[in-house]
Image (cartoon, rainbow, N blue to C red; front, side, top):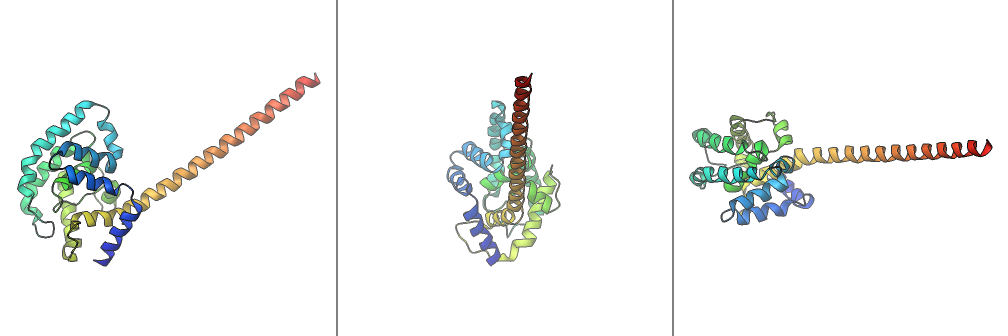
Length: 223
């Protein structure tokens, strides 16, 4: 448990977007669409930009949430550490399938929204987490269900005692700090290095062009 708590502390200190999750949670019951948009825009930004390409995608999100609402209601008292996911596999698959078909939500976003409306039950994932746990990037409903069972097996007996943060969110923060953040930092270092190389190359070309202009000017003067 101590390692899990340490990862959560690290998440809070390193991830500036953490507060947007709290905002989404606070308004989820009364404003489900707006809460979902906040979650997707901050934690599924890579795919959410495609939702913005067509206003009908937002309508599709709203419709999907309406269809899933009765399913979320049936699961609202379920606890991650106690449930048998195999007994609820049909309803979990229905929710995931419906949400993941919406442009801008898809595989990562579906898990975010499922967690948002059943915070004590569903663990979120992203591309990196799927890869680290050997799940396909274009994950199907059965994959997400298996991921829940995998996380349950790994963390079920953790004895989580934080009343403010559900175990499912703590697991997500653990996975994010352990797997996702190092990959993001690696990518950022690579991008920074590439920008530096491009800047140096641009400077070299400018200097060469300047030398050529000076040489041409000198040749004209000597004619």
